[in-house]
Amino acid sequence: MDRRAFLKATGMALGAVALSGLPVRAQGLEGEDLANLEKALQEALGKGFRDLTPSDLVKVTMPTIAESGANVPAEVEVNLPPGEVKAIHLFADKNPTPRLASFMPMKALPYYATRVRLAETSAVRAVVETQDGRFLLASASTRVTVGGCG
Amino acid sequence: MSIRVIVRLTPARPKAGEEFRLQAVAQHPNEPGTRRDERGNLIPARYINQVEVFFEGEKVAEVRPGPSISANPLYGFKFKAEKPGAYTVRLRDTGGDTGEGTVRLELA
Image (cartoon, rainbow over the protein chains, first blue to last red):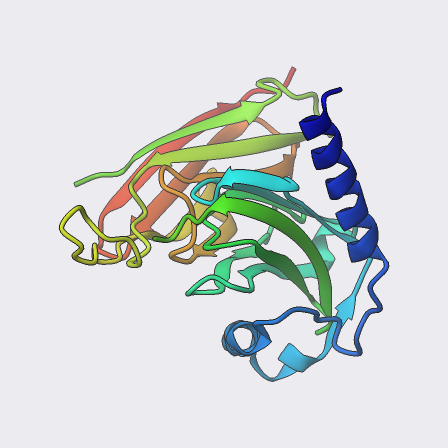
C-alpha cells in the first residue's frame, strides 16, 4: 500500500469512528443545516416531524465516498413486517430540496432503492412512518467530491 | 412524448414464496431546476414525480420522487413471489409526460 492509499484508508476509518461515537440528540438529528431539513420534514411528515426515534430496524446503505454527486446509489431496508410500514421518506440535509422521495410500499416489502443527486457532502436520512404513527429514523453519510445539483 | 421505461426482475424466475427485486429504469434527464446551461441560464425543473407499480391491474406500490433524483433514474422494489402475472410500472413527470414498462413474473 502506498502512502496515499494508506492515508486515505486510515482517514476514512477514523472518520467512521468519529461518526459512530457521536451522542444521539433527543430528536435524533445532528448536523449544521437542520433548518433547511426541518422544513422538508414538516412538509412530508406533518406535525409529528419532531418526534423521530433513531432505530436499528431501519438500515440506509450509501457509499462512503462518491466521486460525483449526480448519481449516488441509496438503499433503505426496514426490518418490520410488510404491513406495518406506511411510508419511507428519504432526505438529504444540504440539498436545495431536501426531500428526495417518499415511498408507499402498499403490497411491496419495506425496501426501496434509487439513485440520488447530492449537492454536497451531507447526511442522508430515512424516516419510516409506521401504521401506528411512529417515525423511525436512520442516517448515513456520503462524502461528495463534485456536487450533483449545479 | 413518452418516457422509455425498462423493467426487470432479479432473479428472473423466483420460486413461489421467494423474495425478488423489481427494478425500473427510465430514460429521463430529471432536471432538478438548479443546473445551468453553457450560457449560465437556469434549466427549468422537469422531473418524474410519480411512479406507480401495478400487479395484474392492482396498485401494489407508489413513489413520489422529488427533484433530487438522478438523471435516468432507477427505482428498486422488493416483492414476495406468490403467483405469476404482469407487473406494470407507470411514470409521470412534472410536464405531464408519461411512460410505462411491463415485465411478466413467472415462477420457477
